[in-house]
Length: 224
Image (tube, rainbow, N blue to C red; front, side):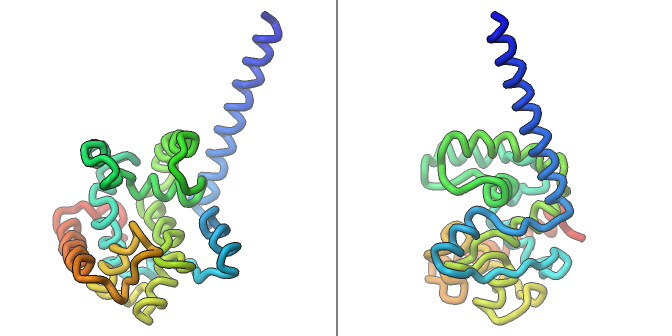
């Protein structure tokens, strides 16, 4: 039995070391902007270069932050990383809709990789509450909008605002912000400057949703 006890002891030490490493990296990125993500790295290799420039949340139009939350995760301020209502709705709808929160997507984009494998989902489930415990909501949203893909080779809201509308992210209008938000589920297949009628209607709904979460207080956790 002694070899088994030794193996168990080393396994526990390895798990503890990995957990401490995860905490250290998570704390680091609370204050230091992630230099790259797996997706950005992969797209750089595929395309040769990508368009990306980090921008602090204070330099992003508040309506743009609200639009992205309204489109992607309207209950962002109310949950601890997992929106159980959205998850139940996703299960009932099958593959037609997703239940991932902005927190989960940030973990996936910054710390993990794309795909639907069980190991990735398990790591996402472990790291999401850790990030929620260590980062304020505004930081989670700031990182998300800076690493999210808005088009082929276009990463982050600064690059997207310039690419599609020729403005800085701080100058985005409510309509422009809503258009950027609706491309997030399918960034390679949607053009924020040239949306089809169905997505223009969706953008109008997002614009209304952004106004609603401001009025009812659901944007309070990330408003400066």
